[in-house]
Image 1 (tube, rainbow, N blue to C red):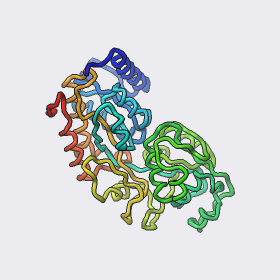
Image 2 (cartoon, helix red, strand yellow):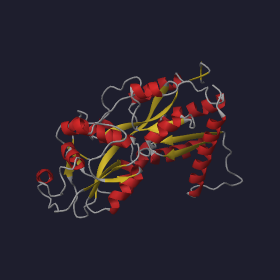
Image 3 (cartoon, rainbow, N blue to C red):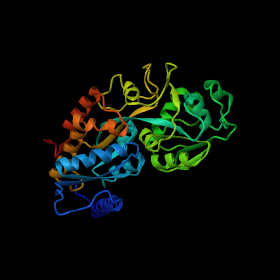
Image 4 (spheres, helix red, strand yellow):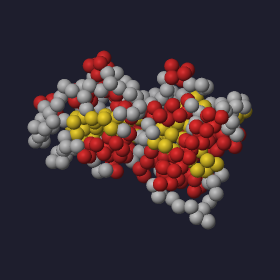
Length: 360
């Protein structure tokens, strides 16, 4: 299908704005000896995997000469951009439902890129090794538990002197896959949450402070005494934020580590990779673990795309699930994909076509 002038302009504007944003950060400078790019890929979406994507895309550019411009605008924004065909792919921490897939202009595939965790960060300078349960976290965000020395929290932490201080819950204001993961977990541990709020990328929050993106939540929690917030683990690690030990389905209190996150994916992975692994049964699993995906159109001949552009996109994604790229995950506090997810992702990428022909 030939791209309309409007879509063409939107895509080019999108690429220009992302390029300006990245250039303004001063992270790279052009020089006479700079490797010339073989392709330019524009993408946008989830902020949750952004530290891994920044490292991986930079590494791939140095390796293959392909420039990837990725805008961390949230999972919802990434899917909208893909739906409008102004990006080569969208990043999302929430897989598309059957209904959402039907609403896309064409068939899409989900390629998992790494595993991570949504951690519960808090701002209580004198409190270390805080233990929480999903039920308590749900009640905090429902507005039922409002003080840090509430009996329910104190019972889980008999050795801590919790302050008589207001709890300030922080939530995402933008459409967010991180919110979807967090709320999906809460629906599994709290009947009241499931009935009143449910799971979704955007929710009607009963109480709390709004912040945009994982960086926004992390920053707001860090700056707000008594705050609590759900945030991608890398942001909490980067800011050296205290993180609660979360009680899992086996009753064990677990901190997010490479090992405890990986343990959450010990079950079977469906062929299309669309699955949630929150509240797993493994005794050593961190309970708010998840995959994050790159979503792209299965048929790449759209919006005046060339075969070379399609091949560059698929080549990048095949590299993203390779041992070389997966080894980068632990450098920025993520976990590599289990082999079953890699195998399924490889099969999905092999099914991607250009004008009905496999992309080799």
